[in-house]
Amino acid sequence: MQIIDTPLNDVKLVRPKVHGDERGWFAEVFNALAFATAGLPARFVQDNQSFSQRGVLRGLHYQLGKPQGKLVRALSGHIWDVAVDLRPGSPQFGQWAGFDLRGEDLEFLYIPDGFGHGFIVLSETANVLYKTTDFYFPEGERCVRWDDPKLAITWPLESIGNPTVSSKDAKGQALDEAECPDPYIPISPASL
View (cartoon, rainbow, N blue to C red):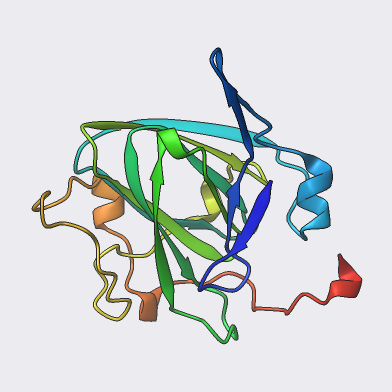
């Protein structure tokens, strides 16, 4: 299993090793020891799955009080997944990175708590699975606007036009008005 650094501190791409032959293939997609060795959470408590049509944009979601780290994978289809650092005091506060996730690639994206998360569906449909490090906490649910000019996320909308967003996501707050997660505390290797 490869754990790959990304432009955002603490956000990682996880690429399982695939073993294939004439019968098909096999991959170990999660290993708690490999995750812990790489400094990633080894315990996830909830699995969520969504099915969406082309052009659906979900996000940018995060939770206060019971923040959730997320391990995201497109089971089928193609999504463009976005992580935004919302941790006050982080040297990358307000910065974002986008990642192509496709069902056939078996890649996961690990997004730690304190980050906003969203994605847009670029294929006809997409089935997305994400594991979370804490349970859903409705009282702490928050959303930053996907189109906030301050974030200036370059969503791949050329072939989509206007994305389909939920009424809740359309009411997301601007970054300047958002209630942000707990302040950023750098992780030292000794604390892992």
